[in-house]
Length: 256
Ligand code: 13P
Image (tube, rainbow, N blue to C red; front, side, top):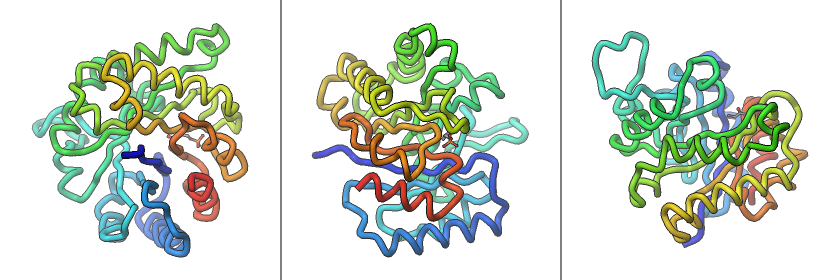
C-alpha cells in the first residue's frame, strides 16, 4: 500500500453560500478535465454554512472529499454556537481540520483541548487533518522541532496505531501562513522527515510510511512543484490559493 497524497483547500472564513457553490462548481469543472491519480485526494474545507450544499455537489465524485475547519469536543449539549463531530458526519463530511494556528492563536486551543477534539472526531468516523507549526521567533531560535514534537505528542500520541491511521498531519509554519513567504523545499522536507521519524518511533515505520504529511503556508502553483517533489511532502493544505479555481487546479496538478 502506498501512502495517499492530498491537496486540501482551507477556505477559512471566506465565501458566502452562493460564492462557495460557484467555487465548488468551478473546481469540479477543472478536476473533471484532469485524470486524477488514484492515490490523490482533493479535499475542500469550506465554512460550516457551506458543508451541506458542498456535500451534494461532491457526492459520488471520485477522489473528492469534504472537510470541516473545526469541531467541538463534546458529542452534544448546551454549547451555544458549536458544532459536533457527529453533526459533521451526518452531512457527509469526511475530514476535520484541527489545531490550525489560527484556532490556537485566536481561540486559545491547546494540546489538552485538541486531544479531546481529536477523540471526538475519530469516534464519529471522521479523519483528522492535524495542523502543527512554529511561529517565527521559534524558527529564529532554532527550536521548531521541539515545539512541533510537543504539539504532536500532546494531542495525538495517546491514540493507538489503528486510530492513528486516520490522522493526516499538516505542517504549517506560522510565519508562512498568508504572508507570501513560503518555507523552502529543504525546510519543509527537514520538518516532514522529522515528523515522520516521531511517528515511526511511536507507532513503527509501517504507520509512519502511510501517514500523509501535508505542507501549508503560502503554497501556490509556482512553488508547489518544488515542495511536492520532496520525498516526505505528500501534498498541501492550501489557504488563499484554494479560493481561486485556476490556482487550486495548478496546485493539484503539482501533486500528480
Ligand atoms: P495560505 O495558503 O493562505 O498561506 O494559508 C495556509 C493555511 O493556513 C491553510 O490552512
